Image (cartoon, rainbow, N blue to C red):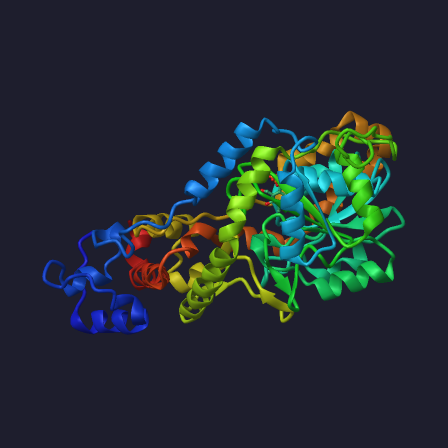
Length: 450
Ligand SMILES: Cc1ncc(COP(=O)(O)O)c(C=O)c1O
């Protein structure tokens, strides 16, 4: 569709676009009308240059990997790099103990294993999360109990946790989704009142802070992921943080086939009753040490850019950046999340909005689906082991109860995400993102018909 805007329309678009339109598309080659026109309608892209790639690495990583290779010590039992990383990550986060694991999922497995979660137990989780949060509960044949989301923050609604607690509840497993802290004050208060351990799923929340202290250090345990997309990355990898020495030892034993602390050359005694091999390799440990040299600077840059982007997006009607709770002193911004209200975009559907953003050079996604209503999750009610442990009436009740997350349903229909690497470039990138949204809003009526 060939849309020519008049001067009044252009000035209007330019003024709402603010700094975004002063980006300097050379006026000698592009007319004023083109500047405000979405790429999907034939205009120039709001962001033509692409975003920083991920992962980021140089000779530091190459040398670290080569050193490990040449040392011949590829296993944590014979090398010292994983142990060194544990020490450094504990220092960085202010935790007393850190145990490196083969992934975020296995970090959560170690924590739940150390708590001896098992059949008949219930664990409270949010529905707005990666499936791993659910899987680790089910791997122990315990029942995951979903507590609805807070639409404004995208986090578990901490005010609804208490109502979900039963005599079978054995742990609360909140997630700091997108890297933004869940309401830890409220969660810890409820956990304390009912004497329930809180295991923070901080897999997306490296260096995020609640009231000036790092997340992952507030509950009994905090679990992190170093999987390839994460803000600290070794391809695969994870860690458990805790301030409780006994719990740290139980996690360590669980991750080491149920045996005692891995002292090189010593004999390893069994402890507990279950365990597995959840160890991190020395190669991953060395990669993490190298990546750690950048993590603070990258985190600061994400914060600066995300704050600026929030300021710009807050000025656009119908765009609602995820709220940070009053106790949040830093979000890790693993994801930049906002809600899209199509009624302020001439009823332009979210899928079309995202497509138009993509055409502007600003890739985005709609984020998680409704995990609590997913076929994969619903199938648990027919799992033969679960039927044996809990019986059909309980599993049917579980199925019904878990479907009641109305705020999460709304959230899943409105959410839009940008990935963390998009926050690592210059400040102008944020202006381009906002400009893309404004262009689409300005021309939403035409885009609906496209
Ligand atoms: C919230 C959350 N929990 C758990 C995990 C699992 O981590 P990993 O992929 O390292 O096993 C992830 C990783 O994607 C995650 O985002």
